Image 1 (cartoon, rainbow, N blue to C red):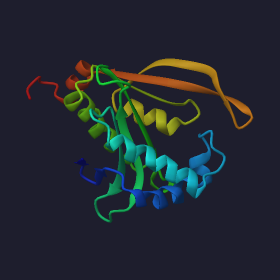
Image 2: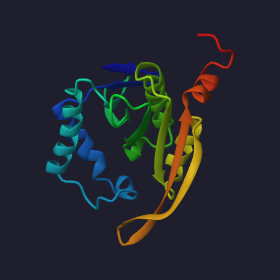
Image 3: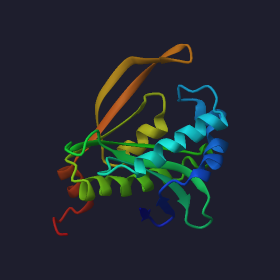
Image 4: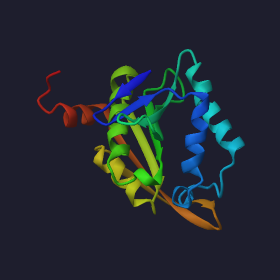
Amino acid sequence: MILTTNRLILREFVESDWEAMLAYQQKPLYLRYNSWTDRTPEAVREFVQIFLDQQQQDPRNKFQLAVTLKSTGQLIGNCGVRRNSIKSFEGDIGYEFDPEYWGNGYATEAERVMLRFGFIEMYLHRITGHCVADNLGSAHVLEKLGMRREAHLRENQFYKNRWWDTLIYAILEEEWRMQNNPLGTE
């Protein structure tokens, strides 16, 4: 599967993507909001293997794609939309990017395509997303996607010797359609 935007190509993972992923997952800024304290080649290979295994699902419930720059082909992150079972009408989105590319709108651009895929191709009714409350950039991405904050879970995760809050966002198909086609024509 390949999805494109003005600046990005979202494609299926290949085994060799682990190297580019390791390069950004080792950066302190990337690790700031993750429970991981470091990333090893073995751990990142296993991480990529999860996405490779998902490609073999039939029917497929999870679509996590590598995000590359159209201009250079450089892998700069990944994003996806998932649901727990083929019968579920609710899914969730997730994304991560190389901190070098934060603040350029890439996460929003990529996840807009994934929301469209989730609502149109997967027939989802509701899509959620969550982030650590301290990660204001990620919360801003979810808001720019038109998602509503539905919950603020206080101190629900413990890692790196502290408690972290989680923000939960969601958007319904009808809300997404109104934002993306306000005249109701398609």
